[in-house]
Image (cartoon, rainbow, N blue to C red; front, side):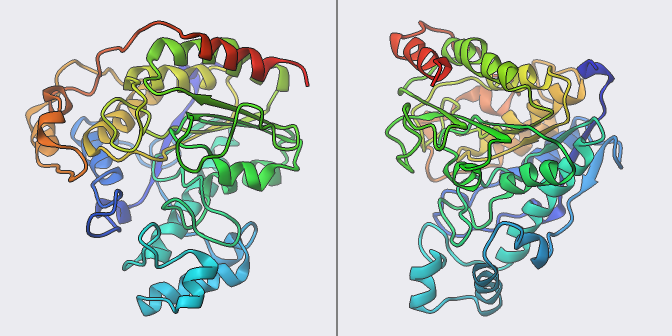
Amino acid sequence: MSDADRQCCFVSSEIYRQTGYRGNHPLAIQRVGTVLTLCEQLGWLAGTGEGGYVNSPQATVEQLCRFHRRDYVEALQAAELNGAVPAEVRRKYHIGTMENPIFPGLFRRASTSVGGSIRASELAAKGKIAYHPSGGTHHGMAGRASGFCFFNDPVFSVLTFLELGFDRVLYVDLDAHHGDGVEAAFKDDGRVLLMSVHEEDRWPHSGGLSDRSTGNARNMPVPSGFNDSELDYLIANAILPLARNFRPDAVVITCGADGLAGDPLSTMALSNGCLWDAVMALCAFGLPTVVLGGGGYNPWTVARCWTGLWGRLSGHRITPALPAESRALLESLDCDLVDEDERSPSWTTTLIDPRNSGAVRPRITEIANAVTAAQ
């Protein structure tokens, strides 16, 4: 089945129209809400139902406990209710910290992300491509929060495929940070192949080149300045060959936008078009596919990347110039982590980044050779 013949659905929720985090937290910026508005302005969310926009349900406690420990789930519920946590709860579950703060609506927001990823896999299982940019919280652990992630919705996307009877699920993580929580969840499950392309020497400081977990992980830690030509090389010479050899019958992709040039929490240098191409190459297998969001801390590059990705997935024409109302929306954004003199004028006028081609450094070929080598 070609991409043109497949229905695509966009799974999200009105809860993301407002930021949840507060103050100077890196996620206290407009992200998915801006994507929703941009897609509406461009006429790309006109349909509803399984062939268009699908409202994300909130995962139930019982659903959350399919992966997360019940005591942790209940602690997070209590934290939202009380607006604070005792010191022993903070230490045990890593909530109420600067990294993972308590804010109004926290439990609902996090559980809605999980519900969206479950629903996305249910829809994709029917042969669709399900896009859930509100997902991608790939650092969450079974019994604690980690890296701004309270629950781990990619885990639930993979679990849903497995519970629906799919035998082999491919998980590809293109976020700038290692998908450690997903790897931890499936490290003993040979039905899942875990691939992560992330910046080396970057938090959470895991996912080394030699790390294969219990055999089903392939980690690709890339150097600073990672460019489009280098991602193209890894897709063609590592990720696609490994995927073909694994022969999956479903795919889950976390497409964080923090690997883009201009993101304040990485020094990778990708263009959004290159990320779109990588996702489309994986969608070209013609399998049930879920595409999630992830990290991204520059509101302009995140919004443009995930809006354009929906355009590519759903077959809409991406024009060079944005309409006036979309330019005004992007001009209204702000971010304390990105200085004004670092903001490109193109971030408010077009969805499409200029391509950042460059040399493919020896380290990249070394990575491809290492992850494709026989164990």
